[in-house]
Amino acid sequence: MDAGSLSTRLAHRTIRKICVIKPSALGDVVQSLPILPVLRQRFPDSHISWVINRELSELLTGNSCINELIPFDRRGGLAAWWKLLKRLRSSQFDLVFDLQGLFRTGIMTLATGAPIRIGLQTAREGSHLTCHQLLPDSGIQVPAYRRAWRIAEELGLGELRATSEIVIPDYDRIWAEKLRASLSGPLLVIQPGTRWQTKQWPIRQYAEVTRRALREFGMSAIVIGSRSECAAAEELVDLVQHAVPHGEIHSLAGQTTIKQLAALLQQADIVLSNDSGPLHLAAGLGTPVVGVFTCTSPVRSGPAPAAFRHMVATQVSCAASYCKQCPNQGTAHLACFKELTPDRVWQGVVQTWSEIQRQRIRAA
Image 1 (tube, rainbow, N blue to C red):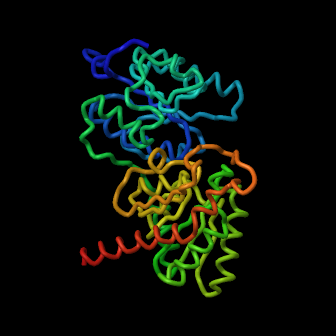
Image 2 (spheres, one colour):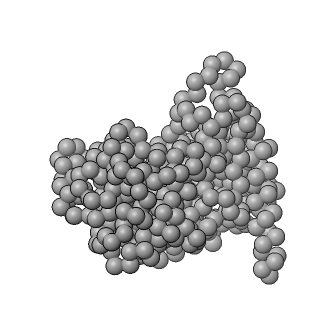
Image 3 (cartoon, rainbow, N blue to C red):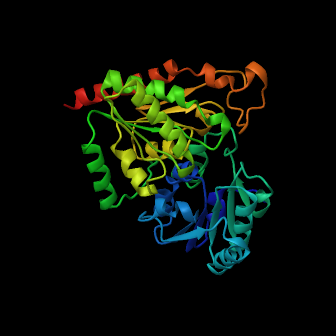
């Protein structure tokens, strides 16, 4: 890699084709979306492509700044991998951004043969070797939502308002509106499941917060999640229904497409979630969110600070360790779950709901 700012590299260059390589995960892709309007403003006539995991590609469909989606089949085998690399090579991109920074995205970046290949300082697994430049001030201690935005700042457009365009088809919007109309009171959407052991704040504690929301605010609740999280969602529903027999709570875990999920999150009054894709998707849509953070940092990994966003984090000594499995034994094992009590998360819900109510009164 040689020195020089991105603006310097682009001076006197004709940029006809741009490729953004950010295949996953849902939350990371959502946090990278604001760079698209920036690229479109800076390069209004350029063809912009995005390499995305096939199962997430629906999220980007309809985006007015994207000319082409290039799906990546993570489990497609060598034939699919070779086909992707050939496509990237033949596309003749002039400018490539690797926002993932892993071995496989480094190979994709190198395969493009683009004369300008840019990465972030979080690049690992040797992916930095395939870039001409890593953007300064984009390391691991920089909040995730700001890392991609470093592109905007390097292009002299950092003063623009960061926006995320997520296009929801009318039929998905109507489906969510009908579902919302069938429920009484404000709507609380809950994402309790996760793949990480250390992110799995106990279902019983989610149930305690949900019970209070139904009893004290007259809310209805919908539990979301992937197919693998159906059991956790059903457990949450059962616990709440047992305590609040007349309360409305339903599980849609494993039953929604990405666009249906987005439409539902847009209908919610509040979304309660661990550090997960739905939390960031809800924030990107402008929905009020309460985030539960145990092993990750709300500063590094949470959505950008804004009104109606409250991140509640554990305060144990090993907080924000980013360990997927708890390394501690005995009484220290998963101590963050006990320290982060339902009362603390409930206060985040109360504060968010109070702010929403005050805004509605001012707007009336």
